[in-house]
Amino acid sequence: MLVVMEKNASDKDVDHVCEVITQMGYQARPMPGQQRIAIGVVGNRNPVEQSRLLGLPGVKEAIPVSKPYKLVSREFKSTDTIVELPNGAMIGGPHACLIGGPCSVESKEQVTEVAEVVAKAGGRILRGGAYKPRTSPYAFQGHGHDALRMMSEAAKQFGLATVSEAINESTAEEVAEYIDIIQIGARNMQNYALLKKVGSMTKPVMLKRGMAATIEEWLLAAEYILDAGNTQVILCERGIRSFDKTTRNVLDIAAIPLVQGLSHLPVVADPSHGTGVREMVVPMAKAAMAAGAHGVIVETHPRPEVALSDGHQALLPEAFIALGKAMEAAAMVGGRRLQHSQNRAN
Ligand code: PEP
Ligand code: MN
Image (cartoon, rainbow, N blue to C red; front, side, top):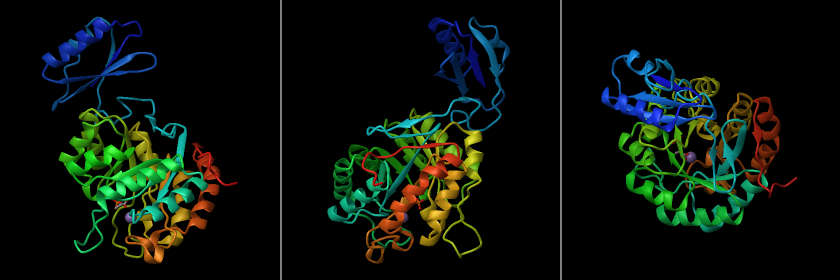
């Protein structure tokens, strides 16, 4: 249920409605809008009795919300959420940007070299794994704390914001200390303790879709983060499992406009993990942008043949820079404006 207040409703009216909602055994979530305040009612298992709320001073209407997820839904908030980063980059609404970097941060030299490439391509955010959730326990697990530090320094040199994955509650704290966006990986999409943890933090979160997650499960995972208090969530479509092994995953491009219709949260796409095939990364990045994605997150490495993870899907620097050039037109097709770094090579 969403209680929409009159334009001229006072703070006292809003407080009173919140009190009544609490008395009814639910939780009240006031959401200030440009014109008026709406108050979300969450925590109900059965339909909420409208009549008690409709008669209260300042209440305009009460709209039932049919979806199991509430706070992330368009019904609760019709305007797009825009996530703004310390370097001025924005994701959401009309704004899109290019995110790039290595799968794993391997050394200071490697991450600095890649940061320069990302900036040259017009990218605004550097990606890089410090804590890697690998399928095999024998695969490279990431350089951890040192990687976060190296990545943050490299990004600063080129005016980039940063995104890196946290794999549990303690690494979430560590990532937040150095990095601008905390990534929750596909394998952790339903790690509810981790979702609650990043929900209690103030840094933006990039929530990847689980490899076999339905749209509803994905949005409910995002709901955990908003319910814990953090509204700065970016959704990332990164491909889902199929019976066909030709590609690593199937990038669900239809999920981009679908989720944008269901939710106010920004949606980016990851064509690197979505395909797992270098040659397919650029066409799928363009397709995602043309479908209205708020950006793409793409792996690039100066020497993919010696990369410690995911070299097979990493773009070479020249290809990444060429993608940067093609992004503007692709974003325009999807109705978004691409943001550039000032360092972009012409
Ligand atoms: C990654 O971004 O490097 C990664 C491991 O992605 P995902 O969680 O989508 O597999
Ligand atoms: Mn990877």
